Every structure is written in C-alpha cells, then in structure tokens.
Image 1: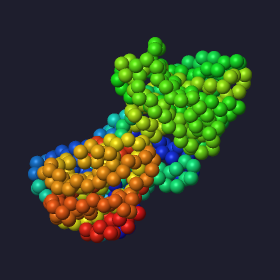
Image 2 (image 1 turned 135 degrees about the vertical axis):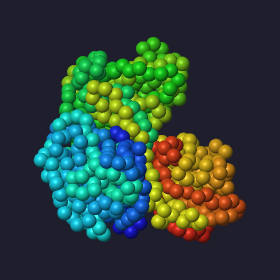
Image 3 (image 1 turned 120 degrees about the vertical axis):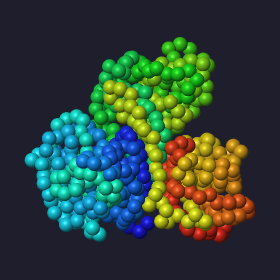
Length: 573
C-alpha cells in the first residue's frame, strides 16, 4: 500500500522481549513499546470492556488513510455512562493518554484515568475546543485533518492498577445521560505512555514488543524479519558465570573481562586451575527423559582455544562436543554415553572473534540434570577462554539468545499477520502471484510456514507457501498447496533438500484451474484443475499461530495477476 512500510502493515504480537542482531552487528534486546496499550486500533477486541456501548470495527477512514477507524455506539440505557475501557498497571509517574476522535452522533468525548483523582479531560471534536479539565490533569486537542482530532490528557498516576476510559458525553463533562442507540464517535489510535506529553502514535496489537528485523553479525547485511516459536532458557545467570548458580570445578571465573557480542564489557574469562584439563562451570536444571535439548554458549579464544559443551544426568548418560575457538571448528567430535542419542553440533561466527557454539542431543531414557562449559586446555591458573550467553532450551536447534538472571526466562512466540484494511486493498481473490524469500535457522525436512493466505477462521481455506517437507511428507525446499474446504486443489513443490541459514526464493501463482510454483529460477510444477479459496489475511512465518518458520522472511512480493510460468522462474532466479 502506498506510503506504508512493511512493519506498518503487520499486525504483530509477541508478549515478551527478545534479542536480535542490530545493524551494528551487536546482539540487542527489543525495547518495550512506549505505548502501554494493546489492540490500539481494535476496540472491538475483548481487551477493551464495552459498558452500555458496542464497537463496530473498521467503519471509516482513519488518520493514516486506512479503513481501520471504529465506531463507538452508545446504547439506550437511561441516565448512565457508555464508556469503552481497559485495565492497566502503571508506575508512579506522569502518563499521557491520547486518542484520535472524530464526531459522529456526539460532539464531545472524555478521556479519563479512573483510578487517579481528577485525571480527566473533555474535548469538543466538532469544533476543536477544549472543555473541562480535571484539576490533576492537563490537556490538548489538535486537528489532524478530515474532521479528526488528536486528544491528549496528562496526569501523574500512583503505582498500581488503573483504568483507561473513553466516554462519549452529551455535553461538556456530562458523561451520564440517556443513550439514544446512536453511533456516538469515531475512534482510532489509543496510546498511553509514561511521558509528560504525547509522542508519535505507535500501533500495538496483542503485545508490547515490536517485530525483529535481524542482521548478519559479521557482514551486517539485513537477514529479514525473524519469526520464532516460544522457547525457554533453562539456565539462570546466563552471562554471570561468577555467580554461585554456576559451580566452578578446577576453575575460577573473572567477571566482565572483555567485550561481549552485545557490545558491553560483560563477557567472563573461564580460567582452569594449574595442570587441570577440565576446568569448568556447571549448573543444574530439571530436565525430562526423552526430550531433545540444545545447549549453546558464545565463546572466544584468549590465551587458550579449546572449549567443551557438556551435559549429563549425574550417572552414565552424557553428551559432549569440543570446539577450537581460534577457528570455530570441532576439535573433539560430539559423542553420547549411556542411552542418550541423536547428537548434532553447530558453530557460527558472530564477529570480533566470537563464535556461537551448540550441542543438541536427545535424552533417551534418562532426564538430564546438569549443563557445563569446560576449558579443555591444560591450565596454568591465570590463562583461559572467554564465555558469554549460555542457553539451554528444549528443542532440536538453537534459537535466538534469551538472557537470564535469577530465574529462567521464556521468549514468547512471534505472530505476524497482515489482515483487515492492510490486506484487502491489495489482495486479488481471483488470481495472483506470491514471490517469497526466506531461510530457516536449521536444516531438516519438517514443514514450516513462510507465508499463508487463509480465511479468518482457520486453515481449511488457504494458499500455503512453506519451507520444508512437501506433499506426502517427502523432502523438499518448498511446499506449496492450495486448499478449499479442507481439500487440496493443487499440490506443488518438492524440489530439493534445504540447508540451514540459506536463503531460498519461491513463487506461487494461482487462478481457477491454473496453478504453478517455481524455485531457484528453474524448477516448475503446475496443476491445471482446482478452485481458488476465499481468504482474508496473510500469516507471515506462521500458520494460524503454529508451524513457525524459526527463521527469516527476507522478501515478500504480491502481483495481483497470474504471472506466466516463465516469469515465475525469472523471479526466483
């Protein structure tokens, strides 16, 4: 859509912070949105309480030019208020509440922080006049065009529970009246921020944390939108190996000895004792028998080069691998002991001499109880290796780093969707072509979604572009299918095996009785029969909040026509 960036089109939800590699090549954490509200344009969502009022969604053009503004409708209850509200927990600080409002059946609106005495303000959104303002508040009203006003109210709140409320009013400061059942006001773009004045509006959906646009830590080239499933770091004090949570055996730790991959001086030096070849820091955890785990750590050579990743169950079961930190190469091959199985390893340079190293194993028959990082050079009591950012997660591959301190931390899943007024203006239901480029953090053949156009109610109506196993479970780079009423209309793909962190580009074209997909500029599959589903949204890197890509979407293009097969091949070259 003209004038809108990719991230402005996405309805994105993640309910926790997460790390990514920024354009400087450093690991960084996503900052919480300055807007403390969620569903800031979706007042019909259950997060907003409607009291003697209702919301009709997407009824008129909003200040940003999209048809995303809602109508607040009062009911006909006598001598009552008709608010829309949401509960929030606030710090003891100045907060500014703002809302875009346009007159409909009513000309007046009140913004209110209900748990803070006299924190309210009234606005005439027909004339742009400021009405009564509570003694604890200050307020402004600003025209933004086309009959819209941005109304702001600032007040200092106490710490704890509070309520943001939007009241249609029959006159200045008259919140209680007999409703007429009319469409009272158009509303859009609610924002609450810990600030003494309103800043530029930030749209939130179901979470307060933004999408991650990731970069290569070495080349600093953009890698795309990072989408991952939920994971938990089972280790505590992930950067503080001097903490007592890490048991040191034949070793000591010097804290904050060098610059870490996040650009701060927080990496530690692990120093084996004199004559020791197994100086280590270890931590206990509660694992599960039969689960697959991945242990990772960032390591860098100092006076010594050799590092070992290790886990055991305190008995006969163990998994381990050793790396040379000068090269990132395996120095002692991965192995398991006892009943544990399925060991694999990875090593990735992350810049400035650092590597992120991993060990994956399946705890067949016995639960793991300990994870350890070893220095495998013969110690002299003063020399060592640098370590930072330890992570242990249940899963068959490593995901982005999850920092911890005193407790385990869970990174919530990334859910990205283009829907509603951000989807319908450009999507052609009868014919079109998607071109998508993406990569996964790991190899293998399990299916993962790249982009899925589907109906709002589920996946029985969809146009599906995936990376991983193809139709019938066979191995392949792309799995493309078209489904109507739960029945496959076209099954396309299955071209070649794929590798971790390697970009692949594919195209899928659709029209009634005319489907095709291509990848790598050459591979082509066609299907000359089938109908086209009616869809309402586009999932990115997930399919209906499942089948997460665990990787990057680098590029997505849509053409509102069925391009030729030759064009599909050219676009994927």
